[in-house]
Image 1 (tube, rainbow, N blue to C red):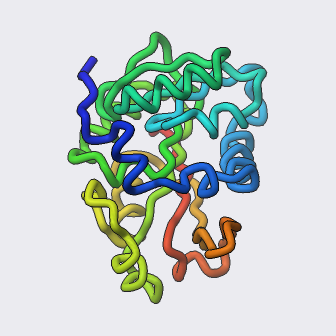
Image 2 (image 1 turned 120 degrees about the horizontal axis):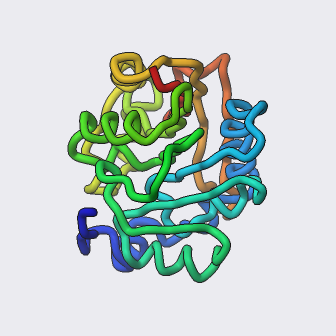
Length: 217
């Protein structure tokens, strides 16, 4: 297993995501849970791995009857996750070197893979750990469409390596998995503290982020 770097430790969250809690409210986590539950409706006890789980907020909101696992490159984040979610298994790991024994019915990566240098390694790692017909669900910011210039202006995170269009991500998905569905997401932390998070199919070509559902080939 590859060791974590210091790039994503406590200073990173304090500098770039001081409003992390407000940017991950319950209604956002409910949408993520809905995405995962709809792909394993007939599986008695699914195994879920959240890559780049940070403090474990999504995993803590997922169905507690599932087998839940989380990884993050940040030692700081994993320590916080273990403290708040003692019934979930966590490990420090890169997105290209996934730990834990056995395969997974669902692997998720919410606002993660745009940070990872090698998307080929991400795809290979996810495919190798998904069970046959398992699903990969991810969310990424996109920098095209009418909101693209604004997103580039507002994006202050220097670790965002892949500032790509939605077509780039959809093509990458189809090259490595079977594309099942995708959503657009309007999202923004408003000045008075409410986090706007609205998924849409109708306007998905105009949103600043997308959610993609794919299946292992």
